[in-house]
Image (tube, rainbow, N blue to C red; front, side, top):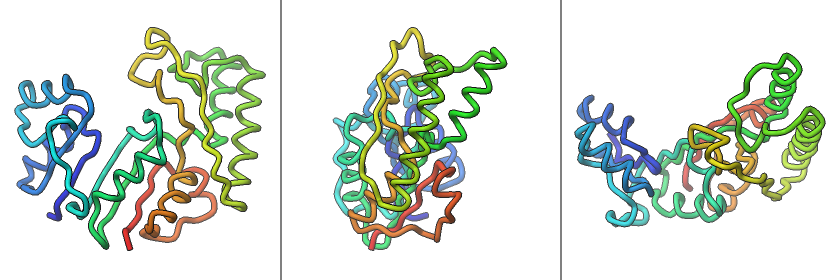
Length: 212
């Protein structure tokens, strides 16, 4: 297997699976020291590290994965620059993120509100019907601007208190999406691994790019 980095590995579940499959060139890093300790001592994973204890070398990985991390970071553009520097020429970057720009999500939230279904609260659905409708309209407008005019505006929302939003989503404040990521990665010298169709650009939550 190519040299692989899981950036934002949590307790190292994916790293553990790859270890058990016999892959040896796998590394996981995470900002949360307690999460890393849990992975090491409760799940017996040794090749995961806290960011402040592991020296990441530029141009040293052939494959970098980051899943459900970027929506939480303060500076998503800077975060993508960090990931891009770690990847060798012709190496691949995979970013998985909830697509909070997808207008379909807001229609789903509105439907749940109308039917009085319980929602997993996050900064993107913690409002009434009018608020959600305005979120839906804004998402439609931004999708149009980003597809046709490569608009670089990063839409942010107000974080929630952790006791309101459970599961670690309270600080997911950037309206993360494929369009913003792909626009930024083209500026950093990446090309999409395969052509992405019009609808997929709106709906997908996975970016896969190759460094030139």
